[in-house]
Image (cartoon, rainbow, N blue to C red):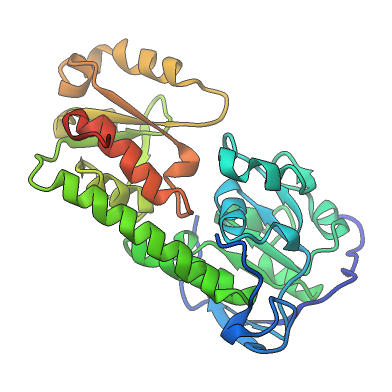
Length: 335
């Protein structure tokens, strides 16, 4: 890392970096705080200590100048009504949800992709929240230890370090711990209750439906980059009434051979939509590959589409389940 580190102006916490406990790989508008105390300005509910992806942090008061890196954690903050505690944001995969757009537009965009360490520190953050492990890339100088040395506590979305399958249970944990960090635990409980009601309604309308075999196509040429069994995407497919043909892949995302795709005979291809390659181009690639011509999903041209930001651990999960369920089971689509 080049250039001196600049200490932030406001510190909301002291961060103690411990040995990793796990491998880190890859709203309510109300203003009442923890235990009915002052909203997120310290006081009741603090100090608060949490261990996240092997890093133990004690917050003496709630952060006031958070910077988020990656869309799904930005949307976690917005879903919890915490835009007034955000000093900056970075790295969108696609469009911010319409209900969050006005709040998002009031927040400074620190960088279109990941900011340099110097640019990140220049925002004077007192909390940095990353969605993927790459947000805290050591080679770019943004590792959590470096930020802790400068007095800036951090959080990594738990999908980036959970050892084993990730599902709605982990989403609840993420929402609760973030809300608790900011002194507004009741906002997480309200959001979780709404999500649980929505997921239960989806499950009820899919009861008894056959589960088509689903292959997720994220990207790839010589091999296919797909959703494995350890990411929220796998749980999402199951809740939407499908069966992930690569659920036995023990990671959130991974490469598989096209031969294995053919062998597993998926009936539906779910395309993740993001970045510079449009969905139409991905469909064309699959339809024009002669090796895939006998795959049921290709033969029948049966595709479903989800934005990538809907297939990672964030507040979109219940809506994504509904959206995918409507595509997998159009005969049971929500009215």
